[in-house]
Image (tube, rainbow over all chains, first blue to last red; front, side):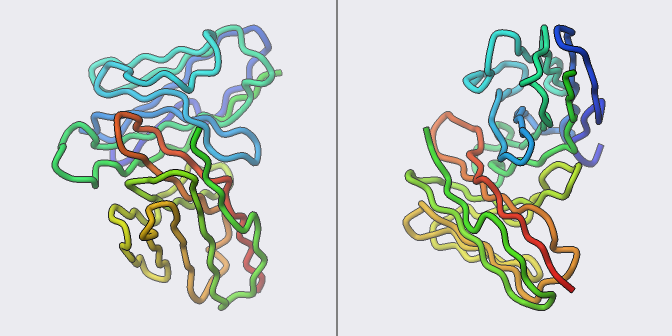
Length: 120
Length: 112
């Protein structure tokens, strides 16, 4: 597609349940990023993928959070045993970083519309 | 970790006025990006800056990459009602770390 897409747009779940959030990056973008935005806050980095591997998982807040990427395209962020503090907007971004090393334009990250997660 | 200080936190201006916001960092960035976020939406890229001292315009928006690589500003001229939203600066440092560091945002309100 033309832009980054995410699904679902909204997710309401009960505490203790697992959730899966999906991100479909811009076609051809090799790098994919997950961020979290709590109410009225800035964006907090979670994880970065280059192709199917994740060289930087430093932002994942606990071992309940995991992510994978398959085929160098779609990524899934999984939160197990959700807690109320997990409620936030989860944003995915992609960039061309890694596809072309000769230009800094690949630094630019393009965001999807986000998934609003509410844990009751 | 890296910190980005963005100011002001909020602004109320009259339609037609110019507005300026800025970000400063305790460390050097190689790329500065400015985004706008509307309620319920993801951040939309406004301007990207890749070189120290670079001054770039996008319509009524102008942004500069500070010469020290530790700061950037965004100016909006002749504001209109659709400029309302939250503006974020974001920086990308060199090396293997690829995540953006975001400022806390500037909430802009344009009064008719």
